[in-house]
Amino acid sequence: MKNIKIFITLLLLSSLSLTAQNKNTSTADKHFSRFDFNKAIESYEKLVEKGNADEYVYKRLAEANFNIFNTVDAEKWYAKALETSQDPETMINYVQMLKANGKYEESNEWMTKFASMRPADVRAIAFKENPDYLPKILEKGKKFNVQNLEINSEVSDFGGALKNGKLYITSARNKARREYGWNEQPFLDLYEFTVEEDGTYQNESLLGSDINTKYHEGVVAFSPDGNTMYFSRESFYEKQYQKDSLSNTKFSVLNLFKATKSGSGWSNIEPLPFNSNNYNTDHPSVSADGKTLYFTSDMPGGFGQGDIYKTTINSDGTFGEAKNLGQKINTEGREMFPFISDNGTLYLSSDGHLGLGALDVFYTKEIDGKMSKIRNVGIPVNSNGDDFAFSIDEESGEGFISSNREGGKGSDDIYSIKKLQPLCDVEITSTVTDKVTGAPLVGAMATLYDDKGNKLASKPTSAEGIAEFIVECDTDTDLEVTMDGYESNKISIEGTDEEEIAVAIALDPIEEIVKADRVELNPIYFEYDKSNVTAKAAFELDKLVQVMNRYPNMVINAKSHTDSRGSSSYNERLSDRRAKTTVQYVISKGIDAARISGIGKGENEPAVNCASNCTEEEHQLNRRSEFIIVSGGPNNP
Image 1 (tube, rainbow, N blue to C red):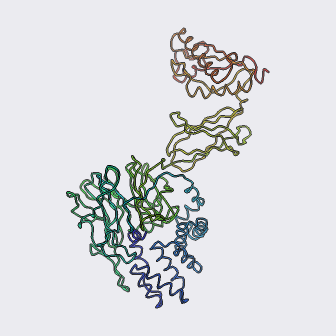
Image 2 (image 1 turned 30 degrees about the horizontal axis):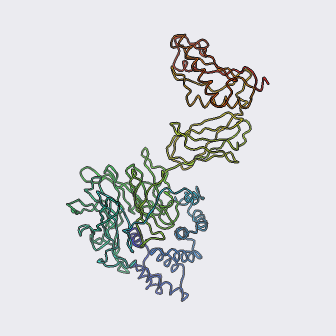
Image 3 (image 1 turned 120 degrees about the vertical axis):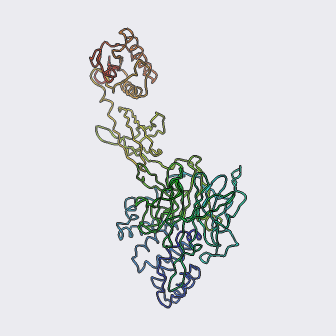
């Protein structure tokens, strides 16, 4: 991530103390202040060899290696610095490097120490609430397919934005540019490719000189019609910078600009009104309706080293006030590269939320004016490297992610992504118990249905009486549990965007519904003027089947009743059809026809004697079935 670190940490580095600790470190410090990290490393390591190193030198070695993404050596020198230091920020940086090197258990140990020293830090709070977050991310399942793009080069490539048949990327491949001392790669430029019918990207073209300068240009975003492009540019071009009085080093920031489509090129380049030479504004993203611009900034008043902001784009081309998205999104770390998708989901990269490495991709959504809980996108979009500049077309499920993960072609590569499963899901943990004893029920069959009655999944409960399901967020479901010897039960589960929910469901022993003279089921209601068995009726009739299977000598007479609407003769015929339908359903479940009979009682035996003044609820109560024990059962062996 050599080049992207330039792009996202210019101001952060300018805020570091660049004065030499002493005359021994002056040469190394000068290289460091000029972002010539390889030479700085050589100089600091010579001090180590001579025995002149201390905490300051170890930290500088760690930071220099971090900035060229040498995570192994960065980890080593952070560890050395922490032998004599209890600095929390050094600890959190060390945690990031341990995770980047796959040492998750050790990273958790140091995260625990960090949390004890900074208990009010958002990162510490999140860790204490969910210390076992790493397995949950790793075991979440593969939601995307990820493929390295053919157009990547041996240097840094990132970004990936599609508009009107063109792919736009940021790249250091322009060998005509002078090299940047930090990583000995050329300055970043913006490129476009033509998207061919076969999905390949051809006709690489460097954007014109109105857009690209001899300094860094960064990721782009477009208005919905594609006629306005937003992009980042280093402030040196505007002759805006800060200068360190001791080292004479000049420090730029990143600013946002917009350009207007002009034929096949771009013109009318304008800086955005909230730019400053004192802080960065970069990483633009535009909402689907073109009315909101999201971006990254470390402007004063934020929560960390980089925060996500948004502003309105007015119809006359002006902009509203920049608003910080708040501490639910922004941490004391770095939040950057926002992408607002066409369904309103906000994706971003962060090293402040719980993740696998340095920068991970997360997502959230604004609901009723509030941001929902932020979630990690998971593997393989995220790795133990830096993962950033995520974008996606929600309809097709296709998009891009940039990363410096192992196996790439250059220091940063662009990867195509394809969504395989819904990104937002909820794990439902259901616990099934005996209602009388409270003991967990092993082997009960738990079945989950959607709100239309479609079966989603079915599985037996474990030795702990648990059955787990995963459903898409905000999906209303019904959980039905059946078990021999028990009355079936069903509960409704309201959809949520919480990652995990727990539900409990208790089953009554089947004997509880067997009374002296009848099997007492929940009311079996029929629709008005109908005799077919509904899904709800079938659920209850299955309990009767269980009882009759438990007591093989039981004989049942099913009585069906109607409400008082319609003529008496019609109601008798209707109730007779309902009784016969009920009997046929029970027989279809394997009960011998000789053991069950049915009779229609019409409106002659109402449950509620309301005559002609019945309410709809009273009519429904009168449309019912009763199950009389003729012989057999526990009370009549």
